[in-house]
Amino acid sequence: MLQAQDFKTKQEVRWCPGCGNYAILSVMQKLLPKIGLPREKIVIVSGIGCSGRFPYYMNTYGFHTIHGRAPAIATGLKLARPDLSIWVVIGDGDGLSIGANHLYHAIRRNCDIKIILINNKIYGLTKGQFSPTSDKGLVTSTSPNGKKEDSANPITFALSAGGTFVARGIDNDTKNLEDILYTAAFHKGLAFVEILQDCHVFNPTAFDDIKNKRLREGNTVLLNHGKPLIFGKNFDKAVVLSDGKISIKNIHENNSVDLTNHDVSNEFYAYMLSRLSRPEFPLPIGIFRDVKKEIYDSPEIYFNSDSKKIINQAIATIVGRK
Image (cartoon, rainbow, N blue to C red; front, side):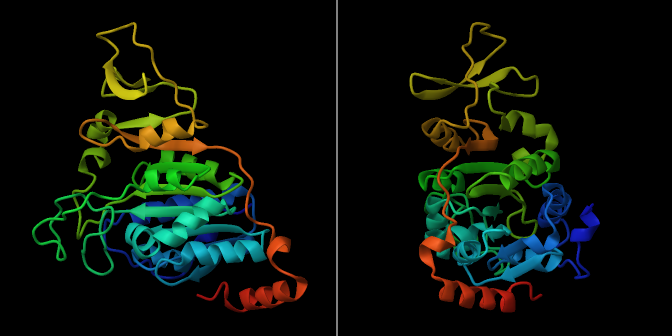
Protein backbone atom coordinates (compact mmCIF):
# COMPACT_ATOMS: atom_id res chain seq x y z
CA MET A 1 0.00 0.00 0.00
CA LEU A 2 1.32 3.44 -0.95
CA GLN A 3 2.27 5.92 1.78
CA ALA A 4 2.79 9.69 1.80
CA GLN A 5 6.55 9.12 1.47
CA ASP A 6 5.97 7.40 -1.89
CA PHE A 7 4.64 10.68 -3.32
CA LYS A 8 7.70 12.73 -2.34
CA THR A 9 10.45 13.42 -4.88
CA LYS A 10 14.16 14.07 -4.41
CA GLN A 11 13.71 17.65 -5.62
CA GLU A 12 14.59 20.37 -3.12
CA VAL A 13 11.36 22.12 -2.15
CA ARG A 14 11.99 25.77 -2.93
CA TRP A 15 9.35 28.00 -1.45
CA CYS A 16 9.91 30.83 1.01
CA PRO A 17 10.14 29.80 4.68
CA GLY A 18 6.69 29.68 6.20
CA CYS A 19 4.86 29.54 2.86
CA GLY A 20 1.48 27.85 3.10
CA ASN A 21 2.33 25.77 0.05
CA TYR A 22 4.37 23.46 2.29
CA ALA A 23 1.21 22.52 4.22
CA ILE A 24 -0.81 22.07 1.03
CA LEU A 25 1.92 19.87 -0.48
CA SER A 26 1.98 17.75 2.68
CA VAL A 27 -1.80 17.33 2.59
CA MET A 28 -1.67 16.25 -1.06
CA GLN A 29 1.08 13.71 -0.35
CA LYS A 30 -0.99 12.25 2.49
CA LEU A 31 -4.21 12.29 0.49
CA LEU A 32 -3.23 10.63 -2.78
CA PRO A 33 -2.34 7.22 -1.27
CA LYS A 34 -5.92 7.08 0.05
CA ILE A 35 -7.63 7.31 -3.34
CA GLY A 36 -6.42 3.85 -4.27
CA LEU A 37 -4.68 4.56 -7.57
CA PRO A 38 -1.10 3.75 -8.62
CA ARG A 39 1.15 6.77 -9.09
CA GLU A 40 1.28 6.26 -12.88
CA LYS A 41 -2.49 6.91 -13.01
CA ILE A 42 -2.15 10.32 -11.33
CA VAL A 43 -1.10 13.55 -13.07
CA ILE A 44 -0.41 16.95 -11.52
CA VAL A 45 -0.85 19.82 -14.00
CA SER A 46 0.25 23.31 -12.96
CA GLY A 47 0.34 26.80 -14.37
CA ILE A 48 2.83 29.61 -13.72
CA GLY A 49 3.56 31.05 -10.29
CA CYS A 50 4.71 29.69 -6.96
CA SER A 51 2.07 26.96 -7.23
CA GLY A 52 3.60 25.94 -10.56
CA ARG A 53 6.29 23.98 -8.71
CA PHE A 54 3.86 21.32 -7.50
CA PRO A 55 4.55 18.77 -10.30
CA TYR A 56 8.27 18.75 -9.35
CA TYR A 57 7.52 17.83 -5.75
CA MET A 58 4.93 15.09 -6.40
CA ASN A 59 6.21 11.65 -7.37
CA THR A 60 3.54 11.20 -10.05
CA TYR A 61 3.34 12.19 -13.67
CA GLY A 62 3.31 15.95 -14.04
CA PHE A 63 3.07 18.77 -16.53
CA HIS A 64 4.24 22.34 -15.83
CA THR A 65 2.26 24.31 -18.41
CA ILE A 66 2.08 27.95 -19.47
CA HIS A 67 0.45 30.88 -17.75
CA GLY A 68 -3.31 30.47 -17.34
CA ARG A 69 -3.67 27.44 -19.61
CA ALA A 70 -3.43 24.58 -17.12
CA PRO A 71 -7.23 23.88 -17.10
CA ALA A 72 -7.33 23.73 -20.90
CA ILE A 73 -4.36 21.37 -21.10
CA ALA A 74 -5.79 19.20 -18.33
CA THR A 75 -9.10 19.03 -20.22
CA GLY A 76 -7.34 17.78 -23.34
CA LEU A 77 -5.40 15.23 -21.34
CA LYS A 78 -8.57 13.92 -19.69
CA LEU A 79 -10.32 13.56 -23.07
CA ALA A 80 -7.42 11.54 -24.42
CA ARG A 81 -6.84 9.53 -21.22
CA PRO A 82 -10.08 9.31 -19.20
CA ASP A 83 -8.48 6.64 -16.99
CA LEU A 84 -6.17 9.19 -15.35
CA SER A 85 -6.83 11.12 -12.13
CA ILE A 86 -5.86 14.67 -13.06
CA TRP A 87 -5.20 17.41 -10.51
CA VAL A 88 -4.69 21.01 -11.60
CA VAL A 89 -2.83 23.36 -9.24
CA ILE A 90 -3.03 27.08 -10.07
CA GLY A 91 -2.77 30.42 -8.28
CA ASP A 92 -5.20 33.32 -8.01
CA GLY A 93 -3.30 35.42 -10.56
CA ASP A 94 -2.68 32.49 -12.89
CA GLY A 95 -6.26 31.21 -12.69
CA LEU A 96 -8.38 34.36 -12.44
CA SER A 97 -6.46 36.84 -14.60
CA ILE A 98 -4.90 35.55 -17.82
CA GLY A 99 -6.44 32.11 -17.21
CA ALA A 100 -9.98 33.14 -16.23
CA ASN A 101 -11.39 32.21 -19.64
CA HIS A 102 -9.89 28.70 -19.54
CA LEU A 103 -10.90 28.17 -15.92
CA TYR A 104 -14.48 29.26 -16.56
CA HIS A 105 -15.00 26.92 -19.50
CA ALA A 106 -13.34 23.97 -17.77
CA ILE A 107 -15.81 24.38 -14.90
CA ARG A 108 -18.74 24.93 -17.28
CA ARG A 109 -17.95 21.76 -19.24
CA ASN A 110 -17.71 19.70 -16.04
CA CYS A 111 -14.72 17.72 -17.21
CA ASP A 112 -13.73 15.07 -14.66
CA ILE A 113 -10.66 16.85 -13.29
CA LYS A 114 -9.82 18.41 -9.92
CA ILE A 115 -8.74 22.06 -9.78
CA ILE A 116 -7.01 23.53 -6.73
CA LEU A 117 -6.77 27.31 -6.80
CA ILE A 118 -4.29 28.56 -4.19
CA ASN A 119 -5.34 32.07 -3.24
CA ASN A 120 -2.88 34.36 -1.43
CA LYS A 121 -4.40 37.54 -2.90
CA ILE A 122 -1.12 38.62 -4.52
CA TYR A 123 1.33 37.85 -7.32
CA GLY A 124 4.12 36.19 -5.34
CA LEU A 125 6.55 34.81 -7.90
CA THR A 126 6.76 38.12 -9.78
CA LYS A 127 7.31 40.05 -6.55
CA GLY A 128 4.13 41.44 -5.12
CA GLN A 129 1.90 43.02 -7.74
CA PHE A 130 -1.83 43.06 -6.93
CA SER A 131 -3.86 40.15 -8.29
CA PRO A 132 -7.59 39.88 -9.15
CA THR A 133 -8.34 38.67 -5.61
CA SER A 134 -6.29 41.35 -3.79
CA ASP A 135 -8.36 43.36 -1.32
CA LYS A 136 -9.56 46.78 -2.38
CA GLY A 137 -7.18 49.43 -1.07
CA LEU A 138 -4.14 47.12 -0.90
CA VAL A 139 -0.90 49.02 -1.52
CA THR A 140 1.50 47.16 -3.82
CA SER A 141 4.16 47.98 -6.39
CA THR A 142 1.44 48.22 -9.05
CA SER A 143 -1.09 49.98 -6.81
CA PRO A 144 0.98 52.54 -4.84
CA ASN A 145 -2.16 54.50 -3.98
CA GLY A 146 -4.14 51.41 -3.10
CA LYS A 147 -6.00 48.99 -5.36
CA LYS A 148 -9.08 50.73 -6.76
CA GLU A 149 -11.30 47.86 -7.89
CA ASP A 150 -13.28 45.27 -5.95
CA SER A 151 -11.66 41.88 -5.59
CA ALA A 152 -12.65 38.78 -7.55
CA ASN A 153 -14.40 36.03 -5.60
CA PRO A 154 -13.21 32.55 -6.70
CA ILE A 155 -16.18 30.72 -5.14
CA THR A 156 -18.76 32.99 -6.77
CA PHE A 157 -16.84 32.64 -10.05
CA ALA A 158 -16.94 28.83 -9.91
CA LEU A 159 -20.63 28.74 -8.97
CA SER A 160 -21.54 31.16 -11.76
CA ALA A 161 -19.88 28.77 -14.23
CA GLY A 162 -22.17 26.00 -12.99
CA GLY A 163 -19.61 24.22 -10.81
CA THR A 164 -20.83 20.84 -9.58
CA PHE A 165 -18.32 20.70 -6.72
CA VAL A 166 -17.17 23.98 -5.18
CA ALA A 167 -15.31 24.25 -1.88
CA ARG A 168 -12.97 26.40 0.19
CA GLY A 169 -10.24 25.37 2.62
CA ILE A 170 -7.43 26.97 4.64
CA ASP A 171 -3.80 25.90 4.30
CA ASN A 172 -3.10 25.50 8.03
CA ASP A 173 -6.42 23.80 8.81
CA THR A 174 -4.99 20.59 7.39
CA LYS A 175 -7.52 18.09 8.76
CA ASN A 176 -10.49 19.91 7.27
CA LEU A 177 -8.55 20.57 4.05
CA GLU A 178 -7.72 16.89 3.61
CA ASP A 179 -11.39 15.97 4.14
CA ILE A 180 -12.45 18.45 1.45
CA LEU A 181 -9.86 17.20 -1.04
CA TYR A 182 -10.72 13.56 -0.32
CA THR A 183 -14.36 14.25 -1.14
CA ALA A 184 -13.28 16.16 -4.25
CA ALA A 185 -11.17 13.19 -5.39
CA PHE A 186 -14.25 10.95 -5.67
CA HIS A 187 -16.55 13.57 -7.21
CA LYS A 188 -17.59 12.59 -10.74
CA GLY A 189 -17.06 15.81 -12.62
CA LEU A 190 -14.98 18.92 -12.11
CA ALA A 191 -14.14 19.65 -8.48
CA PHE A 192 -13.01 23.21 -7.72
CA VAL A 193 -11.31 23.90 -4.38
CA GLU A 194 -10.04 27.33 -3.34
CA ILE A 195 -7.34 27.17 -0.67
CA LEU A 196 -6.58 30.33 1.29
CA GLN A 197 -2.83 30.62 1.72
CA ASP A 198 -0.45 33.16 3.21
CA CYS A 199 2.30 34.86 1.25
CA HIS A 200 4.56 35.82 4.16
CA VAL A 201 6.71 38.06 1.97
CA PHE A 202 4.28 40.19 -0.05
CA ASN A 203 0.86 39.87 1.63
CA PRO A 204 1.42 38.49 5.14
CA THR A 205 -1.71 39.87 6.83
CA ALA A 206 -4.32 38.84 4.23
CA PHE A 207 -5.87 36.15 6.41
CA ASP A 208 -4.77 37.08 9.93
CA ASP A 209 -8.27 36.85 11.35
CA ILE A 210 -8.89 33.31 10.09
CA LYS A 211 -5.40 31.79 10.13
CA ASN A 212 -5.07 32.50 13.85
CA LYS A 213 -6.73 29.54 15.57
CA ARG A 214 -7.94 31.71 18.46
CA LEU A 215 -9.74 34.06 16.08
CA ARG A 216 -10.91 31.48 13.52
CA GLU A 217 -13.98 30.30 15.46
CA GLY A 218 -15.47 33.78 15.42
CA ASN A 219 -14.54 34.67 11.86
CA THR A 220 -15.36 31.47 9.96
CA VAL A 221 -18.32 29.11 9.75
CA LEU A 222 -17.85 25.46 8.79
CA LEU A 223 -20.14 24.08 6.11
CA ASN A 224 -21.38 20.56 6.91
CA HIS A 225 -24.23 19.17 4.83
CA GLY A 226 -27.44 18.82 6.82
CA LYS A 227 -26.10 20.68 9.85
CA PRO A 228 -26.81 24.27 10.99
CA LEU A 229 -24.32 27.04 10.33
CA ILE A 230 -23.22 27.64 13.90
CA PHE A 231 -20.04 29.53 14.81
CA GLY A 232 -18.43 31.70 17.46
CA LYS A 233 -16.06 31.07 20.33
CA ASN A 234 -18.93 29.59 22.36
CA PHE A 235 -20.86 28.41 19.29
CA ASP A 236 -23.57 30.87 20.22
CA LYS A 237 -24.15 32.41 16.79
CA ALA A 238 -25.75 31.11 13.62
CA VAL A 239 -25.93 32.09 9.95
CA VAL A 240 -29.62 31.99 9.08
CA LEU A 241 -31.41 32.17 5.73
CA SER A 242 -34.86 33.74 6.02
CA ASP A 243 -37.09 35.51 3.48
CA GLY A 244 -34.34 35.31 0.86
CA LYS A 245 -31.81 37.08 3.09
CA ILE A 246 -28.90 35.88 5.19
CA SER A 247 -28.43 37.24 8.68
CA ILE A 248 -26.60 36.47 11.94
CA LYS A 249 -28.65 35.37 14.94
CA ASN A 250 -27.53 34.98 18.55
CA ILE A 251 -28.76 31.56 19.64
CA HIS A 252 -28.52 32.17 23.40
CA GLU A 253 -30.53 35.38 23.21
CA ASN A 254 -33.29 33.76 21.17
CA ASN A 255 -33.87 30.05 21.69
CA SER A 256 -36.61 30.07 19.06
CA VAL A 257 -34.22 30.85 16.19
CA ASP A 258 -35.17 28.76 13.16
CA LEU A 259 -31.73 27.45 12.18
CA THR A 260 -30.77 26.90 8.56
CA ASN A 261 -29.22 23.53 7.71
CA HIS A 262 -26.51 23.54 5.08
CA ASP A 263 -27.57 22.04 1.73
CA VAL A 264 -24.89 21.28 -0.88
CA SER A 265 -27.57 20.68 -3.55
CA ASN A 266 -29.06 24.19 -3.46
CA GLU A 267 -27.29 26.32 -6.09
CA PHE A 268 -28.84 29.68 -5.21
CA TYR A 269 -28.25 29.21 -1.50
CA ALA A 270 -24.59 28.32 -2.25
CA TYR A 271 -24.29 31.54 -4.26
CA MET A 272 -25.61 33.58 -1.32
CA LEU A 273 -23.10 31.93 1.00
CA SER A 274 -20.29 32.71 -1.43
CA ARG A 275 -21.02 36.42 -1.07
CA LEU A 276 -20.49 36.43 2.71
CA SER A 277 -17.34 38.22 3.78
CA ARG A 278 -15.71 39.55 6.88
CA PRO A 279 -16.17 41.57 9.04
CA GLU A 280 -19.97 41.64 8.66
CA PHE A 281 -20.24 37.87 8.25
CA PRO A 282 -18.04 34.88 9.03
CA LEU A 283 -16.23 33.42 6.04
CA PRO A 284 -17.73 30.06 4.99
CA ILE A 285 -15.23 27.17 4.92
CA GLY A 286 -16.06 23.78 3.46
CA ILE A 287 -18.11 22.42 0.57
CA PHE A 288 -20.57 24.91 -0.90
CA ARG A 289 -21.97 22.68 -3.64
CA ASP A 290 -21.77 18.97 -4.52
CA VAL A 291 -24.17 17.71 -7.20
CA LYS A 292 -24.19 15.26 -10.09
CA LYS A 293 -24.27 16.33 -13.72
CA GLU A 294 -23.24 14.86 -17.07
CA ILE A 295 -19.46 14.95 -17.41
CA TYR A 296 -17.37 15.97 -20.41
CA ASP A 297 -14.94 13.13 -20.83
CA SER A 298 -15.89 10.90 -23.76
CA PRO A 299 -13.09 11.05 -26.34
CA GLU A 300 -15.11 9.08 -28.90
CA ILE A 301 -17.35 12.10 -29.38
CA TYR A 302 -14.49 14.37 -30.40
CA PHE A 303 -11.75 12.19 -31.90
CA ASN A 304 -11.51 9.46 -34.51
CA SER A 305 -9.07 6.58 -34.05
CA ASP A 306 -6.25 8.30 -35.98
CA SER A 307 -6.42 11.56 -34.03
CA LYS A 308 -6.60 9.67 -30.71
CA LYS A 309 -3.48 7.73 -31.67
CA ILE A 310 -1.57 10.93 -32.44
CA ILE A 311 -2.66 12.56 -29.18
CA ASN A 312 -1.73 9.53 -27.09
CA GLN A 313 1.70 9.41 -28.73
CA ALA A 314 2.23 13.10 -27.92
CA ILE A 315 1.12 12.60 -24.32
CA ALA A 316 3.44 9.62 -23.92
CA THR A 317 6.29 11.85 -25.09
CA ILE A 318 5.75 14.89 -22.89
CA VAL A 319 3.76 13.95 -19.77
CA GLY A 320 5.90 13.05 -16.81
CA ARG A 321 9.09 14.87 -17.76
CA LYS A 322 10.48 16.61 -14.72
